[in-house]
Image 1 (spheres, each protein chain N blue to C red):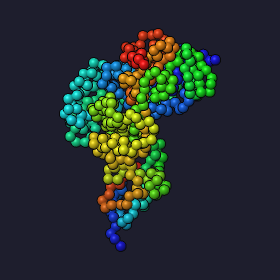
Image 2 (cartoon, each protein chain N blue to C red):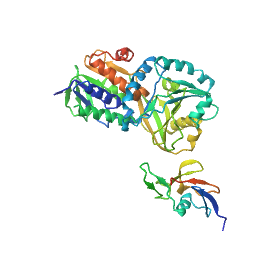
Image 3 (cartoon, each protein chain N blue to C red):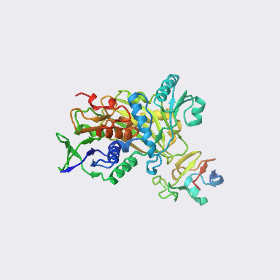
Image 4 (cartoon, rainbow over the protein chains, first blue to last red):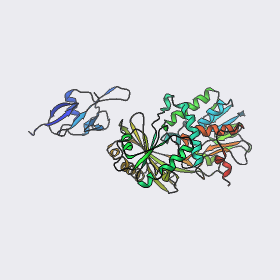
Length: 81
Length: 366
Protein backbone atom coordinates (compact mmCIF):
# COMPACT_ATOMS: atom_id res chain seq x y z
CA UNK A 1 0.00 0.00 0.00
CA UNK A 2 1.40 3.43 -1.00
CA UNK A 3 2.26 6.06 1.61
CA UNK A 4 -0.52 8.39 2.74
CA UNK A 5 -0.72 11.98 1.47
CA UNK A 6 -0.37 14.70 4.06
CA UNK A 7 -2.29 17.94 3.65
CA UNK A 8 -3.63 20.77 5.80
CA UNK A 9 -7.34 21.50 6.11
CA UNK A 10 -8.19 24.69 7.98
CA UNK A 11 -4.76 24.41 9.59
CA UNK A 12 -5.22 20.80 10.77
CA UNK A 13 -2.82 18.16 9.45
CA UNK A 14 -4.63 15.26 7.76
CA UNK A 15 -3.39 12.01 6.25
CA UNK A 16 -5.42 10.25 3.58
CA UNK A 17 -4.71 7.56 0.99
CA UNK A 18 -3.41 8.82 -2.37
CA UNK A 19 -6.16 9.36 -4.92
CA UNK A 20 -8.58 10.62 -2.28
CA UNK A 21 -10.54 13.66 -3.43
CA UNK A 22 -10.19 16.86 -1.44
CA UNK A 23 -13.94 16.62 -0.76
CA UNK A 24 -13.53 13.17 0.83
CA UNK A 25 -10.67 14.45 2.96
CA UNK A 26 -12.79 17.35 4.21
CA UNK A 27 -15.77 15.07 4.85
CA UNK A 28 -13.56 12.79 6.92
CA UNK A 29 -12.93 15.66 9.31
CA UNK A 30 -16.64 16.41 9.36
CA UNK A 31 -16.05 20.04 8.40
CA UNK A 32 -18.57 22.23 6.62
CA UNK A 33 -17.60 23.20 3.05
CA UNK A 34 -19.00 26.59 2.18
CA UNK A 35 -21.70 29.13 2.88
CA UNK A 36 -24.18 30.40 0.32
CA UNK A 37 -24.58 34.09 -0.42
CA UNK A 38 -27.45 34.12 2.11
CA UNK A 39 -25.22 32.47 4.69
CA UNK A 40 -26.65 28.93 4.53
CA UNK A 41 -24.31 25.98 4.94
CA UNK A 42 -23.60 23.98 1.81
CA UNK A 43 -22.01 20.60 1.24
CA UNK A 44 -21.31 18.40 -1.81
CA UNK A 45 -24.43 17.11 -3.50
CA UNK A 46 -23.31 15.54 -6.76
CA UNK A 47 -19.66 14.66 -6.26
CA UNK A 48 -19.06 14.91 -10.01
CA UNK A 49 -18.29 18.61 -10.49
CA UNK A 50 -21.74 19.73 -11.50
CA UNK A 51 -23.39 21.25 -8.42
CA UNK A 52 -20.48 23.48 -7.35
CA UNK A 53 -21.53 23.09 -3.70
CA UNK A 54 -18.13 21.75 -2.57
CA UNK A 55 -16.09 24.84 -3.48
CA UNK A 56 -13.19 25.62 -1.14
CA UNK A 57 -9.96 27.62 -1.22
CA UNK A 58 -6.97 25.53 -2.22
CA UNK A 59 -3.41 26.89 -2.11
CA UNK A 60 -4.72 30.45 -2.11
CA UNK A 61 -7.18 30.12 -4.96
CA UNK A 62 -10.86 30.32 -4.01
CA UNK A 63 -13.89 28.61 -5.58
CA UNK A 64 -12.20 25.31 -6.46
CA UNK A 65 -14.37 22.22 -6.61
CA UNK A 66 -13.09 19.88 -3.91
CA UNK A 67 -14.79 16.84 -5.46
CA UNK A 68 -12.84 17.20 -8.71
CA UNK A 69 -9.35 17.49 -7.25
CA UNK A 70 -7.27 14.68 -5.77
CA UNK A 71 -5.23 15.54 -2.70
CA UNK A 72 -1.58 16.51 -3.16
CA UNK A 73 1.23 16.41 -0.61
CA UNK A 74 1.39 19.71 1.30
CA UNK A 75 -1.89 21.05 -0.06
CA UNK A 76 -3.40 23.93 1.96
CA UNK A 77 -7.18 23.72 2.03
CA UNK A 78 -9.53 26.26 3.63
CA UNK A 79 -13.24 25.71 3.89
CA UNK A 80 -15.70 28.43 4.82
CA UNK A 81 -15.91 27.12 8.41
CA UNK B 1 -58.53 57.16 -28.08
CA UNK B 2 -56.48 57.66 -24.92
CA UNK B 3 -54.62 60.94 -24.81
CA UNK B 4 -51.42 61.76 -22.92
CA UNK B 5 -49.08 64.68 -22.39
CA UNK B 6 -46.16 62.44 -23.33
CA UNK B 7 -45.94 58.90 -24.71
CA UNK B 8 -42.55 57.40 -23.91
CA UNK B 9 -41.72 54.46 -26.18
CA UNK B 10 -39.16 52.09 -24.70
CA UNK B 11 -38.48 51.13 -21.06
CA UNK B 12 -34.75 50.67 -21.09
CA UNK B 13 -32.97 52.82 -18.57
CA UNK B 14 -33.28 55.89 -20.83
CA UNK B 15 -37.03 55.53 -21.43
CA UNK B 16 -37.57 54.64 -17.78
CA UNK B 17 -35.72 57.78 -16.72
CA UNK B 18 -37.77 59.85 -19.19
CA UNK B 19 -41.06 58.48 -17.81
CA UNK B 20 -39.84 59.13 -14.27
CA UNK B 21 -38.78 62.68 -15.06
CA UNK B 22 -41.91 63.57 -17.05
CA UNK B 23 -44.25 62.17 -14.40
CA UNK B 24 -42.35 64.06 -11.73
CA UNK B 25 -42.97 67.24 -13.73
CA UNK B 26 -46.70 66.50 -13.51
CA UNK B 27 -47.26 65.28 -17.07
CA UNK B 28 -49.79 62.55 -17.83
CA UNK B 29 -47.42 59.91 -19.16
CA UNK B 30 -47.82 56.66 -21.09
CA UNK B 31 -44.95 54.19 -21.21
CA UNK B 32 -44.89 51.65 -24.03
CA UNK B 33 -42.72 48.53 -23.76
CA UNK B 34 -43.47 45.02 -25.03
CA UNK B 35 -40.50 43.34 -23.35
CA UNK B 36 -39.00 43.28 -19.88
CA UNK B 37 -38.10 46.60 -18.28
CA UNK B 38 -34.44 47.30 -18.92
CA UNK B 39 -34.15 44.10 -20.92
CA UNK B 40 -32.02 45.30 -23.82
CA UNK B 41 -28.70 47.13 -23.65
CA UNK B 42 -29.58 48.07 -20.05
CA UNK B 43 -29.44 44.44 -18.93
CA UNK B 44 -26.30 43.66 -20.90
CA UNK B 45 -24.32 46.64 -19.63
CA UNK B 46 -21.64 46.73 -16.95
CA UNK B 47 -23.29 49.61 -15.09
CA UNK B 48 -20.14 51.70 -14.81
CA UNK B 49 -20.91 55.34 -14.01
CA UNK B 50 -17.92 57.02 -15.59
CA UNK B 51 -16.84 60.53 -16.45
CA UNK B 52 -15.79 59.81 -20.05
CA UNK B 53 -13.76 62.79 -21.18
CA UNK B 54 -12.83 62.12 -24.79
CA UNK B 55 -15.35 64.55 -26.16
CA UNK B 56 -16.51 67.79 -24.47
CA UNK B 57 -20.20 67.16 -25.17
CA UNK B 58 -19.95 63.59 -23.90
CA UNK B 59 -18.20 64.79 -20.74
CA UNK B 60 -20.75 67.57 -20.15
CA UNK B 61 -23.63 65.08 -20.30
CA UNK B 62 -21.77 62.51 -18.19
CA UNK B 63 -20.85 65.11 -15.58
CA UNK B 64 -24.43 66.39 -15.38
CA UNK B 65 -25.76 62.84 -15.08
CA UNK B 66 -23.22 61.75 -12.46
CA UNK B 67 -24.55 64.55 -10.25
CA UNK B 68 -28.10 63.23 -10.68
CA UNK B 69 -26.95 59.68 -9.88
CA UNK B 70 -26.12 60.83 -6.33
CA UNK B 71 -29.84 60.56 -5.62
CA UNK B 72 -29.61 56.79 -6.25
CA UNK B 73 -26.64 56.21 -3.97
CA UNK B 74 -28.79 55.03 -1.04
CA UNK B 75 -31.27 52.99 -3.06
CA UNK B 76 -30.54 49.38 -2.01
CA UNK B 77 -31.57 47.73 -5.28
CA UNK B 78 -29.34 50.09 -7.30
CA UNK B 79 -26.31 48.40 -5.68
CA UNK B 80 -24.58 51.77 -6.05
CA UNK B 81 -20.97 51.55 -5.04
CA UNK B 82 -18.48 54.38 -5.39
CA UNK B 83 -15.46 52.23 -6.21
CA UNK B 84 -13.79 54.83 -8.44
CA UNK B 85 -12.26 54.34 -11.85
CA UNK B 86 -8.58 53.48 -12.12
CA UNK B 87 -7.20 54.16 -15.61
CA UNK B 88 -4.03 52.16 -16.14
CA UNK B 89 -1.08 53.22 -18.29
CA UNK B 90 0.50 50.25 -20.05
CA UNK B 91 3.35 52.29 -21.51
CA UNK B 92 5.15 55.61 -21.23
CA UNK B 93 3.13 56.65 -24.27
CA UNK B 94 -0.07 55.93 -22.33
CA UNK B 95 1.28 57.79 -19.33
CA UNK B 96 1.96 60.84 -21.48
CA UNK B 97 -1.81 61.08 -22.05
CA UNK B 98 -2.53 61.53 -18.35
CA UNK B 99 -1.92 65.31 -17.98
CA UNK B 100 -4.30 66.17 -20.83
CA UNK B 101 -6.93 63.79 -19.43
CA UNK B 102 -6.56 65.37 -15.99
CA UNK B 103 -6.93 68.83 -17.47
CA UNK B 104 -10.13 67.87 -19.30
CA UNK B 105 -11.63 66.31 -16.18
CA UNK B 106 -10.56 69.27 -14.05
CA UNK B 107 -12.13 71.73 -16.47
CA UNK B 108 -15.41 69.82 -16.14
CA UNK B 109 -15.18 69.83 -12.36
CA UNK B 110 -14.44 66.10 -12.00
CA UNK B 111 -11.92 65.32 -9.27
CA UNK B 112 -9.08 63.08 -10.48
CA UNK B 113 -5.41 62.56 -9.82
CA UNK B 114 -2.38 60.92 -11.33
CA UNK B 115 -1.15 57.74 -9.66
CA UNK B 116 2.48 56.64 -9.77
CA UNK B 117 3.50 53.03 -10.21
CA UNK B 118 3.95 52.47 -6.47
CA UNK B 119 0.45 53.69 -5.64
CA UNK B 120 -0.97 51.80 -8.61
CA UNK B 121 0.06 48.47 -7.04
CA UNK B 122 -1.14 49.56 -3.62
CA UNK B 123 -4.57 50.28 -5.14
CA UNK B 124 -4.69 47.13 -7.29
CA UNK B 125 -2.10 44.52 -6.25
CA UNK B 126 -3.31 42.07 -8.91
CA UNK B 127 -2.15 44.25 -11.81
CA UNK B 128 0.71 42.85 -13.87
CA UNK B 129 4.20 44.10 -12.96
CA UNK B 130 5.84 46.78 -15.07
CA UNK B 131 2.94 49.20 -15.60
CA UNK B 132 3.79 52.89 -15.85
CA UNK B 133 1.15 54.37 -13.53
CA UNK B 134 -2.36 55.60 -13.96
CA UNK B 135 -5.12 58.01 -13.14
CA UNK B 136 -7.76 57.69 -10.43
CA UNK B 137 -11.27 59.18 -10.59
CA UNK B 138 -12.49 58.48 -7.05
CA UNK B 139 -16.15 59.51 -7.45
CA UNK B 140 -16.97 57.17 -10.35
CA UNK B 141 -19.29 54.36 -9.31
CA UNK B 142 -21.03 51.18 -10.40
CA UNK B 143 -24.72 50.24 -10.29
CA UNK B 144 -26.99 47.37 -11.30
CA UNK B 145 -28.76 48.98 -14.28
CA UNK B 146 -31.90 46.83 -14.78
CA UNK B 147 -32.87 47.27 -11.15
CA UNK B 148 -32.53 51.03 -11.51
CA UNK B 149 -34.70 50.98 -14.65
CA UNK B 150 -37.34 49.03 -12.75
CA UNK B 151 -37.20 51.50 -9.86
CA UNK B 152 -37.66 54.45 -12.23
CA UNK B 153 -40.64 52.79 -13.90
CA UNK B 154 -42.25 51.90 -10.58
CA UNK B 155 -41.87 55.48 -9.43
CA UNK B 156 -43.47 56.74 -12.65
CA UNK B 157 -46.34 54.24 -12.23
CA UNK B 158 -46.96 55.45 -8.68
CA UNK B 159 -47.42 58.93 -10.14
CA UNK B 160 -50.10 57.63 -12.48
CA UNK B 161 -48.11 56.73 -15.58
CA UNK B 162 -50.02 54.26 -17.80
CA UNK B 163 -48.01 51.23 -18.82
CA UNK B 164 -48.71 49.56 -22.18
CA UNK B 165 -47.21 46.10 -22.60
CA UNK B 166 -47.13 46.32 -26.35
CA UNK B 167 -44.80 47.44 -29.06
CA UNK B 168 -45.28 50.66 -30.99
CA UNK B 169 -45.56 49.97 -34.69
CA UNK B 170 -46.04 53.44 -36.09
CA UNK B 171 -45.88 57.13 -35.19
CA UNK B 172 -48.80 59.15 -36.51
CA UNK B 173 -48.43 62.02 -39.00
CA UNK B 174 -48.95 64.63 -36.29
CA UNK B 175 -47.87 62.57 -33.30
CA UNK B 176 -49.35 59.71 -31.29
CA UNK B 177 -48.55 56.03 -31.72
CA UNK B 178 -50.26 52.93 -33.00
CA UNK B 179 -49.54 49.86 -30.93
CA UNK B 180 -49.10 46.30 -32.17
CA UNK B 181 -52.55 45.46 -30.81
CA UNK B 182 -53.87 48.20 -33.19
CA UNK B 183 -54.94 50.48 -30.36
CA UNK B 184 -53.87 54.10 -30.72
CA UNK B 185 -52.60 56.63 -28.21
CA UNK B 186 -52.60 60.33 -28.93
CA UNK B 187 -50.15 62.95 -27.73
CA UNK B 188 -46.51 63.95 -28.11
CA UNK B 189 -44.16 60.97 -28.53
CA UNK B 190 -40.69 60.47 -27.08
CA UNK B 191 -38.84 57.57 -28.70
CA UNK B 192 -36.28 55.88 -26.45
CA UNK B 193 -35.94 52.49 -28.10
CA UNK B 194 -32.15 52.23 -28.34
CA UNK B 195 -31.07 49.85 -31.08
CA UNK B 196 -34.68 49.58 -32.32
CA UNK B 197 -34.79 53.31 -33.12
CA UNK B 198 -34.82 52.90 -36.95
CA UNK B 199 -38.10 50.97 -36.79
CA UNK B 200 -39.90 54.13 -35.70
CA UNK B 201 -37.50 56.84 -36.85
CA UNK B 202 -35.65 55.56 -39.91
CA UNK B 203 -34.29 59.04 -40.61
CA UNK B 204 -31.90 58.86 -37.66
CA UNK B 205 -28.88 56.67 -38.46
CA UNK B 206 -28.15 54.07 -35.81
CA UNK B 207 -25.82 51.09 -35.84
CA UNK B 208 -25.74 48.29 -33.27
CA UNK B 209 -22.28 47.64 -31.86
CA UNK B 210 -22.00 44.24 -30.28
CA UNK B 211 -20.18 43.65 -27.01
CA UNK B 212 -19.24 40.63 -24.92
CA UNK B 213 -18.94 40.39 -21.15
CA UNK B 214 -17.86 37.63 -18.78
CA UNK B 215 -18.62 37.31 -15.08
CA UNK B 216 -16.60 35.21 -12.66
CA UNK B 217 -17.45 33.32 -9.55
CA UNK B 218 -16.98 35.22 -6.28
CA UNK B 219 -13.40 36.18 -5.50
CA UNK B 220 -13.75 39.05 -3.00
CA UNK B 221 -10.74 41.31 -2.64
CA UNK B 222 -9.22 40.53 -6.03
CA UNK B 223 -10.24 43.80 -7.71
CA UNK B 224 -11.14 46.99 -5.86
CA UNK B 225 -11.86 49.64 -8.50
CA UNK B 226 -13.30 49.62 -11.96
CA UNK B 227 -10.01 49.22 -13.78
CA UNK B 228 -9.55 50.17 -17.44
CA UNK B 229 -6.61 50.63 -19.72
CA UNK B 230 -6.01 54.23 -20.81
CA UNK B 231 -6.19 52.97 -24.38
CA UNK B 232 -9.88 52.10 -23.78
CA UNK B 233 -10.97 55.22 -25.67
CA UNK B 234 -9.11 53.98 -28.76
CA UNK B 235 -11.39 50.95 -28.70
CA UNK B 236 -14.52 52.88 -27.72
CA UNK B 237 -14.13 55.66 -30.24
CA UNK B 238 -12.18 53.93 -32.96
CA UNK B 239 -13.92 52.87 -36.13
CA UNK B 240 -12.31 49.42 -36.31
CA UNK B 241 -14.69 46.61 -37.23
CA UNK B 242 -13.74 44.94 -33.98
CA UNK B 243 -11.64 45.88 -30.97
CA UNK B 244 -11.10 44.82 -27.37
CA UNK B 245 -9.95 46.68 -24.28
CA UNK B 246 -9.11 45.74 -20.70
CA UNK B 247 -12.00 46.73 -18.45
CA UNK B 248 -12.83 44.93 -15.20
CA UNK B 249 -15.29 45.71 -12.43
CA UNK B 250 -15.71 44.35 -8.90
CA UNK B 251 -19.34 43.49 -8.13
CA UNK B 252 -20.59 43.80 -4.55
CA UNK B 253 -20.76 39.97 -4.42
CA UNK B 254 -17.02 39.65 -5.05
CA UNK B 255 -17.68 38.58 -8.61
CA UNK B 256 -15.66 40.24 -11.34
CA UNK B 257 -17.12 41.54 -14.57
CA UNK B 258 -14.62 41.27 -17.41
CA UNK B 259 -14.90 43.27 -20.64
CA UNK B 260 -14.83 44.59 -23.19
CA UNK B 261 -15.31 44.03 -26.90
CA UNK B 262 -16.78 46.14 -29.69
CA UNK B 263 -17.94 44.86 -33.06
CA UNK B 264 -19.75 46.40 -35.97
CA UNK B 265 -21.45 44.12 -38.44
CA UNK B 266 -22.22 41.32 -35.96
CA UNK B 267 -25.99 41.36 -35.74
CA UNK B 268 -26.85 38.11 -33.95
CA UNK B 269 -26.55 37.72 -30.20
CA UNK B 270 -24.63 34.46 -29.90
CA UNK B 271 -21.32 34.45 -28.03
CA UNK B 272 -18.31 34.45 -30.35
CA UNK B 273 -15.57 32.37 -28.74
CA UNK B 274 -12.78 33.93 -30.84
CA UNK B 275 -13.92 37.37 -29.66
CA UNK B 276 -14.16 36.18 -26.05
CA UNK B 277 -10.66 34.73 -26.31
CA UNK B 278 -9.31 38.04 -27.62
CA UNK B 279 -11.08 39.97 -24.89
CA UNK B 280 -9.90 37.68 -22.11
CA UNK B 281 -6.33 37.57 -23.39
CA UNK B 282 -6.30 41.36 -23.21
CA UNK B 283 -7.57 41.19 -19.62
CA UNK B 284 -5.05 38.49 -18.63
CA UNK B 285 -2.23 40.68 -19.96
CA UNK B 286 -3.13 43.39 -17.45
CA UNK B 287 -4.29 41.13 -14.61
CA UNK B 288 -2.77 37.64 -14.87
CA UNK B 289 -4.63 36.30 -11.81
CA UNK B 290 -7.87 36.42 -13.80
CA UNK B 291 -6.64 33.48 -15.85
CA UNK B 292 -7.03 31.20 -12.82
CA UNK B 293 -10.60 32.22 -12.01
CA UNK B 294 -13.80 30.47 -13.05
CA UNK B 295 -16.19 32.37 -15.30
CA UNK B 296 -19.85 31.61 -14.63
CA UNK B 297 -21.44 33.24 -17.63
CA UNK B 298 -20.69 34.94 -20.94
CA UNK B 299 -23.18 37.17 -22.69
CA UNK B 300 -23.51 39.74 -25.41
CA UNK B 301 -25.42 42.95 -25.95
CA UNK B 302 -25.75 45.70 -28.52
CA UNK B 303 -24.80 49.33 -28.00
CA UNK B 304 -26.87 51.82 -30.02
CA UNK B 305 -24.41 54.03 -31.93
CA UNK B 306 -25.55 57.29 -33.50
CA UNK B 307 -24.06 58.88 -36.61
CA UNK B 308 -21.42 60.84 -34.66
CA UNK B 309 -21.22 59.03 -31.30
CA UNK B 310 -23.37 61.58 -29.43
CA UNK B 311 -26.88 60.60 -28.40
CA UNK B 312 -29.90 62.04 -30.17
CA UNK B 313 -31.67 64.15 -27.54
CA UNK B 314 -34.42 66.53 -28.54
CA UNK B 315 -37.08 67.22 -31.12
CA UNK B 316 -36.99 65.22 -34.34
CA UNK B 317 -36.36 67.63 -37.20
CA UNK B 318 -39.56 68.59 -39.00
CA UNK B 319 -41.84 66.97 -36.38
CA UNK B 320 -43.52 69.26 -33.89
CA UNK B 321 -44.45 66.63 -31.34
CA UNK B 322 -41.94 63.84 -31.88
CA UNK B 323 -38.93 63.65 -29.59
CA UNK B 324 -36.03 61.26 -29.26
CA UNK B 325 -33.62 60.06 -26.56
CA UNK B 326 -31.49 57.30 -28.06
CA UNK B 327 -28.06 56.46 -29.45
CA UNK B 328 -26.00 56.48 -26.23
CA UNK B 329 -23.58 53.77 -27.34
CA UNK B 330 -21.68 52.44 -24.33
CA UNK B 331 -22.43 55.38 -22.05
CA UNK B 332 -26.19 55.04 -21.74
CA UNK B 333 -26.27 53.98 -18.11
CA UNK B 334 -24.07 56.88 -17.04
CA UNK B 335 -25.91 59.45 -19.14
CA UNK B 336 -29.49 58.13 -18.78
CA UNK B 337 -30.56 60.42 -15.96
CA UNK B 338 -29.13 63.58 -17.53
CA UNK B 339 -30.48 62.66 -20.96
CA UNK B 340 -33.98 62.27 -19.55
CA UNK B 341 -33.87 65.53 -17.66
CA UNK B 342 -32.55 67.37 -20.71
CA UNK B 343 -35.19 66.02 -23.09
CA UNK B 344 -38.05 66.53 -20.67
CA UNK B 345 -36.87 70.12 -20.12
CA UNK B 346 -37.01 70.64 -23.89
CA UNK B 347 -40.47 69.05 -24.12
CA UNK B 348 -41.69 71.42 -21.39
CA UNK B 349 -40.04 74.44 -23.02
CA UNK B 350 -37.68 74.82 -20.07
CA UNK B 351 -34.03 75.68 -20.45
CA UNK B 352 -31.90 72.57 -19.79
CA UNK B 353 -29.08 72.72 -17.25
CA UNK B 354 -26.51 72.04 -19.98
CA UNK B 355 -26.34 73.18 -23.59
CA UNK B 356 -28.55 70.76 -25.58
CA UNK B 357 -27.18 71.78 -28.99
CA UNK B 358 -24.51 69.03 -29.38
CA UNK B 359 -27.21 66.35 -28.99
CA UNK B 360 -29.86 67.98 -31.21
CA UNK B 361 -31.04 65.31 -33.64
CA UNK B 362 -31.36 68.02 -36.31
CA UNK B 363 -27.57 67.88 -36.74
CA UNK B 364 -28.10 64.69 -38.71
CA UNK B 365 -29.57 65.74 -42.02
CA UNK B 366 -30.89 62.89 -44.07
